[in-house]
Length: 121
Image 1 (cartoon, rainbow, N blue to C red):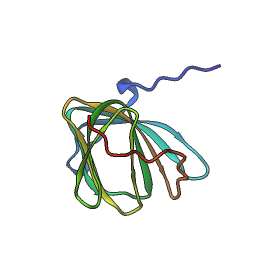
Image 2: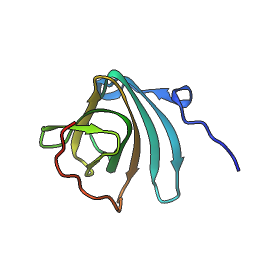
Image 3: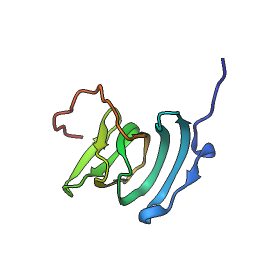
Image 4: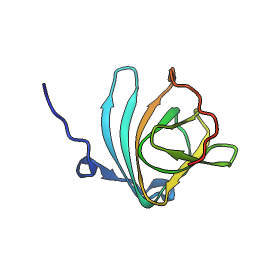
């Protein structure tokens, strides 16, 4: 067995698209062009508005925040919930208090998640 570290110490800061207080640790790549990373969005952090280069699943594992898709509507999101963006879709996310997110990116993702009904945080 091997133990690996995935903490803010292993992440690099990201400032693209006007993002702030954001760092990301790469987790893995595969021959099928799958990218998995861990985003550490700090207090008052922002992943700036940009187009998805491919399909993207944004799975919140700690904390809470807000996500916005191509329609421009903001939706609250918290640990245990995920946002999905299509290739080319404009999107952004932010958090007042911080959140940790696992991001899955690939040309085609096959999701096995139950679509959430609207919920109150």
